[in-house]
Length: 175
Image (cartoon, rainbow, N blue to C red; front, side, top):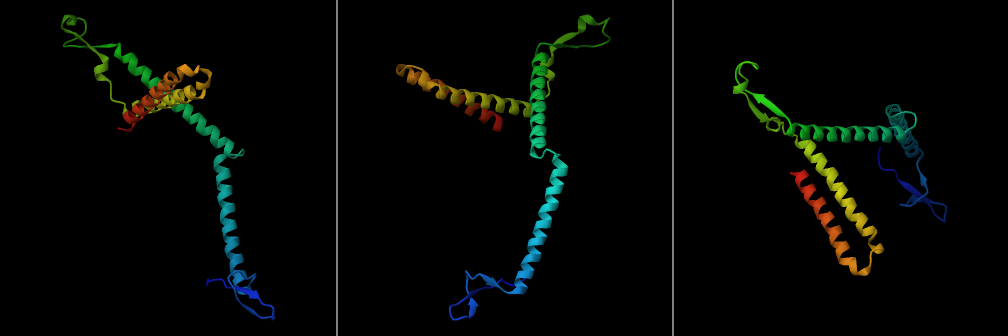
């Protein structure tokens, strides 16, 4: 489609090209209608597909699904960390021969030596800790008015410690 030209109506009854004119040619209008209808149909198709994907209650079901996934992720990270802590206290028997006859040749080795590295879990747990530390700094500042003026420096120092801890945890996470 060529550029739509707008026309203005002048006091002498003539029409001429005018940037802010209120009139356009019929052919241009018909083409604009076709484009508008095409865009409206595409938008309606997209909305139908989205509603089919997200469920009847719209964004509410998406938000609920995201919250459930986050809760599952959090639970898995905590469980994984707990398992790693448990392995630190376990031992593995390493030895030669069978278990009964050669027990004196067996060596107990901490199971933590066989822990596989879990950088994704460590990074995620550090991000959670960083969020918590940042929240502590924010909360300390929010209730600073409840402390006497003489404690203002101490309160700010506590908030800064929390902020710095959050920064250091994020730095470890981002490596």
